[in-house]
Length: 297
Image (cartoon, rainbow, N blue to C red; front, side, top):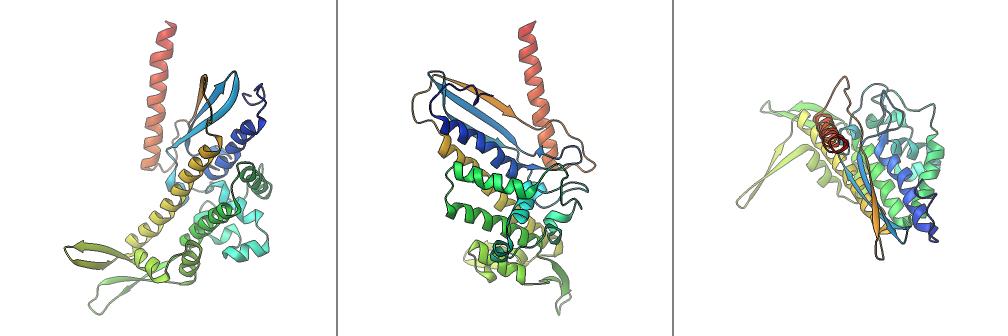
């Protein structure tokens, strides 16, 4: 609405601000049991005005639901962008990143809900590419984004199995090194270096550097932690990149700030992240009630 009534002559900046929304929706929204397009992060956007015209904006993000990257409940999905990527890529592009169908990826198939009746992932992938073009993302930046997303999917398909050494100590081994090789290739890492990070803990004491093998649970936690770190860092970079494009380059007279945050939620399984989200929501509601209603009185 603010963009449609903007009287300014510079329509590009308003178009770029508008295109930031579908881009962040792809990376920050997901299907839940209650909502096919649920926002899984908080967003605070400031719209800046000069002489009654929009001249720029600034985005802030918070409380991205990191746990969804590696696990989700039945009838839910991971973030939209993964499914859009797999539906939007042609055969050659999938081959380039070593990708196939969503059902083949552990991070995507846990909810047994690959598609949404009200959403076309292939169409939305084209909208995502359009948004990136309008926001001046370079081809190299787009390719890097796709490499990170593909690497996360390959990372989730790294499986471990228990074994024992001669002293009857529990050890783990990688079931297949193919996914390790794909992850290393896409992220520009050394195969052995990534393998070591997934299977061993490094302890440094004085001049010594000791490697301690993980047990199965620790290895899975390590794998998931790397995936969450990759995605959350990518998401933060996207917000920073958008801010570079829509930043204010001249003086500002006024601004309007809009807060978009998910409401209180109670699922069958609630993580610590959900507690933080619910607490933030309740705190904001208390602030609103205390100040707005008191002022009305």
